[in-house]
Amino acid sequence: MRLRQFLCPECGSRNTAVSREQGSVEYTCHDCRLSIIRRSVRKCPTCGSTDLYYEAGLITGQKYHCKHCDYIGPLVYEEDVEERKRN
Ligand SMILES: [Zn+2]
Ligand SMILES: [Zn+2]
Image (cartoon, rainbow, N blue to C red; front, side, top):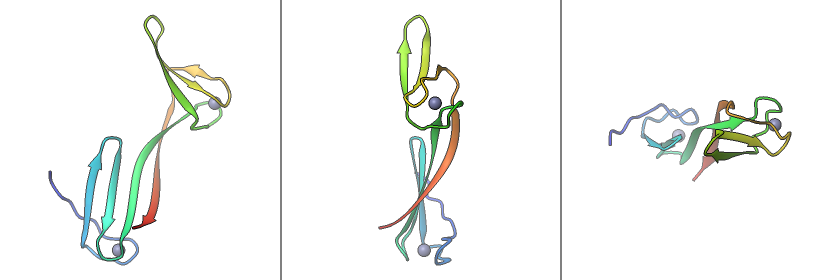
């Protein structure tokens, strides 16, 4: 695995690490213990809710179902969200 570095937005340190996992990337600063997690979330195209679940059908194919507005279809938004926390 290749380690990459980034400039910490909080303390300016380069004593950092980037780790990739499926669907998300985590940036960690070893100096101030900041973690930034970036991931993409799926959103309903009609109401914007993230409360979606995935339905797999044999004939109809794969579809998303929104719990909020009852939208059913193959199209959803993907949006990147960023979450910061201190370890
Ligand atoms: Zn830092
Ligand atoms: Zn919806």
